[in-house]
Image 1: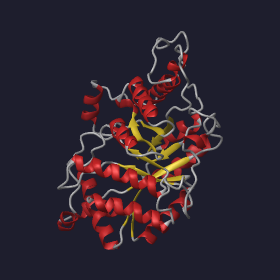
Image 2 (image 1 turned 45 degrees about the vertical axis):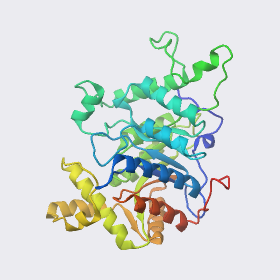
Image 3 (image 1 turned 90 degrees about the vertical axis):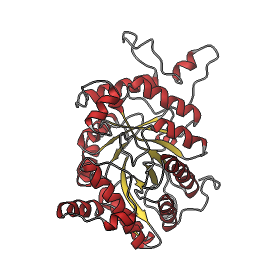
Image 4 (image 1 turned 90 degrees about the horizontal axis):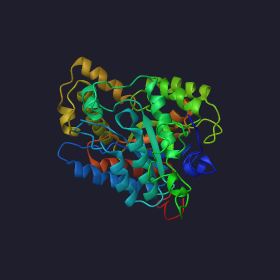
Length: 378
């Protein structure tokens, strides 16, 4: 696969093994979906994403990722590279990345050039998290790829990943048909007259909700992030598979696994419950082929759930850590203890932007994070 060190001399230089601040057992990070609630626009959602990034940076969160989704009215993160460029312009120190880009939806060269550009805009701050799911339904995936074949086979993703890494490192063998093709910005510029090698390149992560990417990440010695927030039953087995499969690489000497977790803290636990119920109703509609905006808490409370719908919602809510700040802190700590995760990537799926922002502040307070970590040099 051409495994290469991710642009520097240590994994720590690329946001791996980040230091936990305050009393958090592991680093805390953010996953933002640019959620669009009923009564709000995509502009509102993306402005909130900027505010979340600023909050994450000043309050000591380790990184912020955005996730690729398509054909979902309540999720405005269809173009992660565009959003990340905007976030980079509004932050100074926060690591930024995709959680993730769905590799089968794009030509590897396109991703290499997009994230090479992001690395040039925000040197040393860019993560490239990759998934193999389409991030949408089959028809939309076919429209994205301009083909009737979704090409999601287990054999195809490793090949695409290998090609992407080759483009990022500019090291195709001479006999390869792509040997004269170069991703720009990228290492090829260092070989031009007067060229200077950039010390960094995007840090690659594999993402997954099953064992396939866990095993592949382990075999390649790459960091792995598991989607606990929507596949919690698979979390412990997948992390065990990742650790059992792990082989040391120039990137990592030992496994490093983060997990995505839904968490919402509020001053009033009842408000946290109202907000997560709205998110659960939005997910119910998505899972039953009726995607839309995230409903208001009032609409969710009025909804007449059928027994089957109630079972789904109860199961969904059981996987969301929510309540007052101390309750959320206890739930997150218990999750770290149960899974052995090296990092938590927190997503706050709620209708109201101010509630989402407040949640990240309250969680930071619960762990004793500094009020302005960026200014303090943290």
